[in-house]
Length: 486
Ligand code: F6P
Image 1: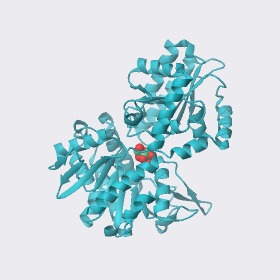
Image 2: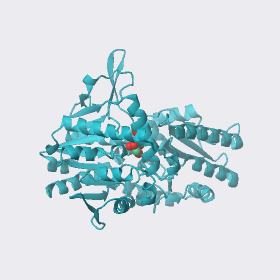
Image 3: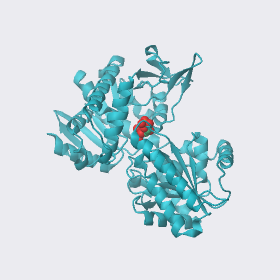
Image 4: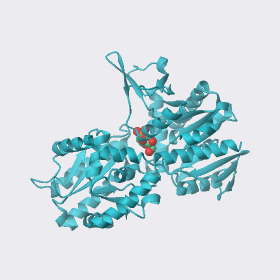
């Protein structure tokens, strides 16, 4: 980022996200700083630490009112403070309606094209609007908008750019949308489609993971708003301004993952994981690592595994599957239901094929340290990514970067953003084609070392070339060009 930071010489970088990079919680009167595990925040914190500026986020604290309004702006990272963290505190009603409601019961299923799970209502929408206003006000209170680059992250803030621009028309705003953008037919099912598009078009630069999402977005604008669209250049002329829309595929810190997977710490973690979960010493290990979300296709994956053990009986007691699952958005019924279904399916399949010496599916819902996760990826012979829709899916990239030993095989759903980059090298599956999915797992299990190694080195080249550093340089570089043209 430092090579592009110069373009912001006279401007402060202001990052806006729903989750905060550090949470302050009071423990026996002492303030403890917790680093939430979220991928987005841990990926962007090093950039903010090196460039400096302000990060505006929901101050979630520990929910007991322990973090007071007096703490609404702190210097972080705690070990060597270099940027401001400005917190926006939300009431329980806001959390229910803005976060669980409009963000996760409307926009999340909408953008993942699962409209049957979408439950829009006026209360969710009103709180989403109000909370976006509150964030816009918090930003304008904190910084001089004429001297800032405001970078919104994700679907929690489709309206905030408009609210900022209404108050400070010349501000430079940009946004990265971390989840898919749906087709026009799907977007049209949401009653607020015009306001959402109008809000996002208050940005100067709008980024998505893939070209497909950019095309979908341009298509939606062409149907819904009075705008001129230059598809070649990714330009939208709307309301007297030009908005640039472009794809910036998100990557991971591949080097960090590789180093961690090769570390002594990972060896130690692996020894204790094996002991704790009675993992077998030999045979094949397949892994799945997901937030418990209905978009991840976990049930489809379990169907495929059941089919594998049924139709390829030689794989019984030969292939063990470890599912690491992180509980997510537990206040939403669909998520509770999913968790119950997944756990019940695993119990049923284990009951069907398990023996005294072998458990087909090992379910880990405990928190795993990054080193333990690196060890699990490293030891995985096969990684199963079977999302029904996924903006990018970084698990696929994390598995690849962690293959420091005997190279494993990536089995990748054709419905994830990462498939645009890795689909030609990984083994592709359609999560709803159970039989072909099972046959692909079998193919992965039979793959010869030379082919595994060839594919894995190509995957690693790709993941390393398009890492998180490259993503930041691409986004900030594009922003610099637009700023210079002003
Ligand atoms: O993929 C979108 C995303 O918002 C990520 O940025 C985040 O890591 C993940 O979903 C988790 O969601 P939540 O913040 O709701 O726990």
